[in-house]
Image 1 (tube, rainbow, N blue to C red):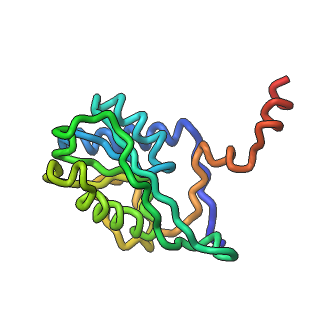
Image 2 (image 1 turned 90 degrees about the vertical axis):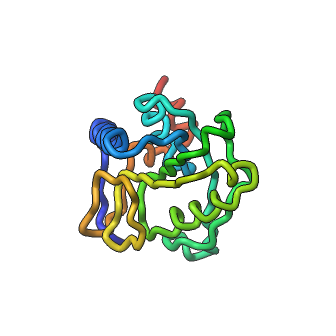
Image 3 (image 1 turned 180 degrees about the vertical axis):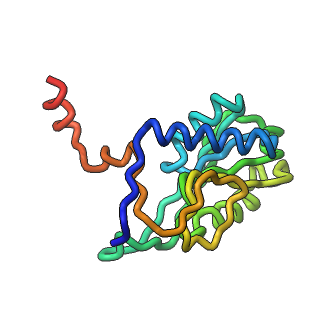
Length: 173
């Protein structure tokens, strides 16, 4: 297993703010589209800073039993979840938490360009993430941290993966 890079909330917020400044200085998107789940906290913060409508696409990777650390075939939800207007999809900023291999971002761009309800409105798609790993073949348009290795990035919400509701109830008594 690769090294771990543990990121706390304060550092995380500073990275998202740095990303917001990069976007503000070089692009004027009309909608933010987040790839779930990794982009959820990022898109929440960015939409508040940049005052933009948001949309979400849900993607799941199926790699099969015994292949938990490998990315498998991507499965997309049928619909985008959004209250944005059709015209808002003119200049899309597609956001994920990181560019690991680049597969998710590449396939998401392809999916968006073919997504029936909005494909005729999209004129441009740019991408953003917080981290780009060394082995990623994808070059995001906006990315505040480009790593010279491929660590496992432990983000501030990740500890909830291993925390049960019973443990939270017991802890908070």
